[in-house]
Length: 152
Image 1 (tube, rainbow, N blue to C red):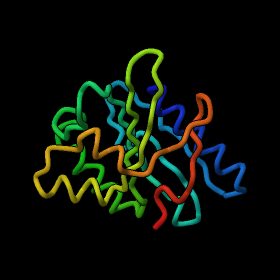
Image 2: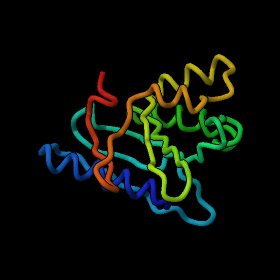
Image 3: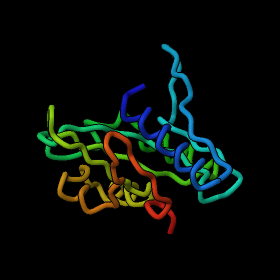
């Protein structure tokens, strides 16, 4: 599990606790020969919080989040299928790293927006495009989750 995934799980659970929302974010332990569909799952009886979250962390010098480079073969299709079958809302959390000692930013992309780009044969999202999606604010080293990031 990456640090970003741990931070996302902790931040979502802090948000749920502080907001008194019955929901829990967790990561299923990945075993050597088994695949996991998404990085983070959120269970809740409330539809707005029943989520599947894919996490990607990229260095800004990469210049973009590329579908072929940052996602495994057919990963987007597998995630999409899982979201459809499970009824979860999907989001992609993207962490933009700028190098040691420099601030980190993270943004949320609704899965439907990612899928739309993917289906139109887009190659991904440039860093500039990613920065136009809702930002997950930070307080110190912690992300501060706001439901308005994904609720329509």
